[in-house]
Image (cartoon, rainbow, N blue to C red):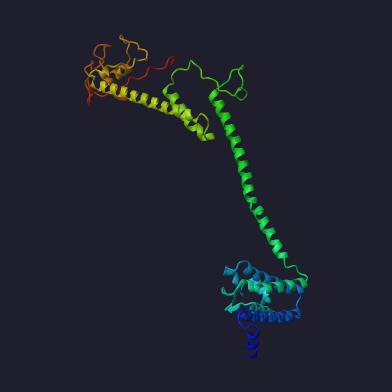
Length: 363
């Protein structure tokens, strides 16, 4: 009550009521913070361990001050590996003091986290940041060292990321160069194929750079040549890919195939017409190709007409008449009758009916 009365006497209009309450809370927090920092300073811990804990705590508070509207910066997780090891010292008794430091900064403990309320002003953490900076300076630790290293990492990171596209670009350029060389070699081979043998006095294709004109005395190609050229044209692009002659070659191939098909269709039509005419001809078997071939066997002695026994046999077998010696040839006589079974004129001759060969000479 005495404090309240004295406060009203100092400020009778109540203009600094809110400011006074906030100031008292801030003073209490600062005094409690000073006691905690003094206690931590007398702990038997290496200065490097203390410096790492204060540096991490300073970084967490600065994130809230720099981004007051970001809720993720207002939460400190106990389970975080870095925070657990550097700030809370892996659950050591000394780490409990740093937990008290976080509580005195205005954080509320919620489960396994410390949360700085969104309703609390981020600027209220600035005095604690100044305190921790002073402690780091006394521990011979630069608080700005980490913040100075971060821009260097962010600057070097794009350079590291640009290495892969640069390597891809170099690899693509090398592949393109080798591809162009292969295509140039293939085009040179194609030029040699289309130019044909060059005359002794003419320049080489590589030296002249022009294609030799086709000869004027080339006649129409036959069906076989068209088919061969069609096959070669169709198989040529598969060896070396597309060339400058592909468009013209495709047209020539299509025309050659069409011409070959037309010639083949006409030839088949002629063959069908000849076959139908042959079937309708009554004298088709009198054609020369159906006549009996002349005998090349010399005549035997005692045969006036000059036909041997073998010729008689074939005459009878083919159904022809015999005009040799009287009555010996049996006779179809050109009658055209088919030989029947049994003996007689129309009997079928066998191998036993052949005359015996003459005895060897000089025997």
